[in-house]
Length: 328
Ligand SMILES: CC(C)(COP(=O)(O)OP(=O)(O)OC[C@H]1O[C@@H](n2cnc3c(N)ncnc32)[C@H](O)[C@@H]1OP(=O)(O)O)[C@@H](O)C(=O)NCCC(=O)NCCSC(=O)/C=C/c1ccc(O)cc1
Image (cartoon, rainbow, N blue to C red; front, side, top):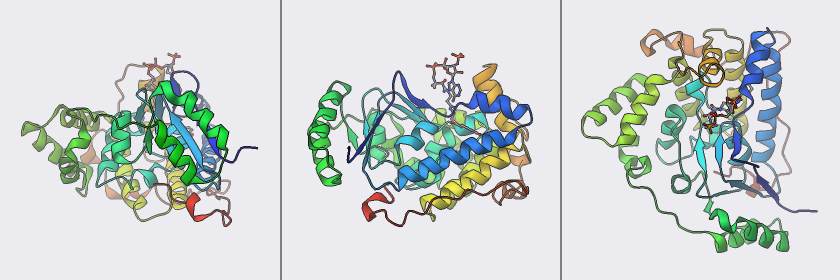
């Protein structure tokens, strides 16, 4: 029996999100509940990981996006290598960052979580470690030795596991020009109340000889679904004051409203443009931030008004030790 959990992907991607194309086909054939059921199971799993009594060691050594983040970041130890590419790209496909990310993004320093969640920026291992998404950086070449060392002690004691991972860890170099070097600018821009104000603040910084990452952030915000951006900002902001369970419940309601195409069909347009037809030219509706009222955004947050719909009912985790809760 193992007293800790080791979780690692096979191939180049740990997980590049859920299988969005399958959900797309089911829902376009009128079966939105297929997607809702999938997310119910997924978010329940995220909650179990986030509150599990055994320490989980997640190895992030490839593309980790969306669903992959939910399977790994809630674990007690997040070990990254030089091969990791991390992103929460949901606003690019008309969704909103989910899998409990409104919890872990809102815990990052300053307003870095808003930056990552709204722009879908890709982070490398050094940046993940600097911001706290990762707990350790271990070179890929040393992973097998690390696994062997952990197997040898086979313990549930987080202090011992941490000390062993430390032995294999390195301090990576934070890339010149990476966004994390300019937390001051990120805080100044991403602390604004609305997406419109965030975008204007970034554009002013870009005009003021800002770094390449600022222009990229502006481009990403302009390319993303406007309604997804507004929903996502509100979701991450609400997440700051909530536990991981409440965050998942809110995210479940948002995702179900999106699957039901109640206010906007952007999720389907995003999947079409990015994953299926691959023209990378989504036609968002509403097409601009100014066309989206607070009342339209409000509609994504309450329970779904449908007799057959059930809210997310997370398992009771009263036996979890304090060390198992709130990893970030
Ligand atoms: C960086 C990637 C992961 C790899 O890039 P690449 O190395 O240049 O490779 P490709 O882009 O050619 O992708 C390889 C194949 O994987 C497919 N793919 C690549 N991500 C995916 C993918 N999430 N799904 C379903 N095929 C994919 C992609 O379409 C392509 O298919 P094919 O041309 O048939 O080989 C790139 O594909 C990428 O950015 N993908 C989008 C990642 C993404 O936005 N993920 C979604 C996060 S949101 C999420 O998970 C929500 C799930 C959800 C679940 C249930 C619901 O009810 C509602 C929502």
